[in-house]
Structure formats: C-alpha cells, structure tokens
Image 1 (cartoon, helix red, strand yellow):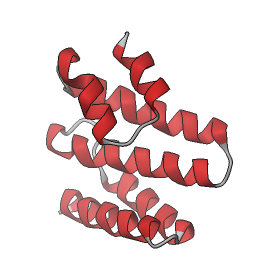
Image 2 (tube, helix red, strand yellow):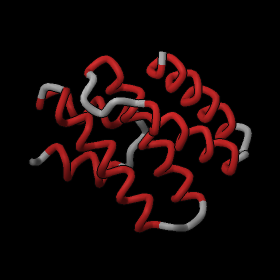
Image 3 (cartoon, rainbow, N blue to C red):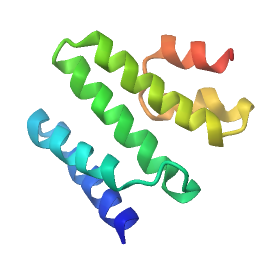
Length: 107
C-alpha cells in the first residue's frame, strides 16, 4: 500500500540521514511525503517524522527559513492529532527545536 511504502521510505531516509547522506535522505523523505495521505490518522506519525526529517536536512544545509517551515508543518500536523497536554512531549520526541516546541505548545 502507499502508506506502507511511505513508512519504509521514511525509515530508509532516517538511516541515510544518520549515515550523513542528506541527498539520499531528502529524496526518500520527499518520496514518502508524496505517498502519505495528510488526512489519514494512522499515517500521521510518519508524516510528522518525514516533515521533521526534511527540516533537519534544511538545517544542515544552513537554510533556516526552510527548516523553520518544515518544523512548523511537522508541529502543526502533530498538534492536529495529539491531545494538547501531550503535545510538548510528542514534539520533543521528534527532535524538533525546543523554541518551536514551546511556541506551538502555547497555542
């Protein structure tokens, strides 16, 4: 299924990022994002992790504007599905910058 393929691509992208191969990671994250239905609750975790991964890639390239945009997308996607009280912990688990985690949590 597209959701299973997206999950696999996201996992491979995470590994590529850990192996310091941002180009491969970006390709895989982008492919995963294209496969994920933004309205399907069961795919939400993968969508948030994929967006956060794209944010990390932008950050390593020094593109703070793109990183901030991706982190915000990830945080807003998480905020749509996670109870307000659990949101700060959920965002920290994703490795989003603490300032963004706090800003989204205050909404």
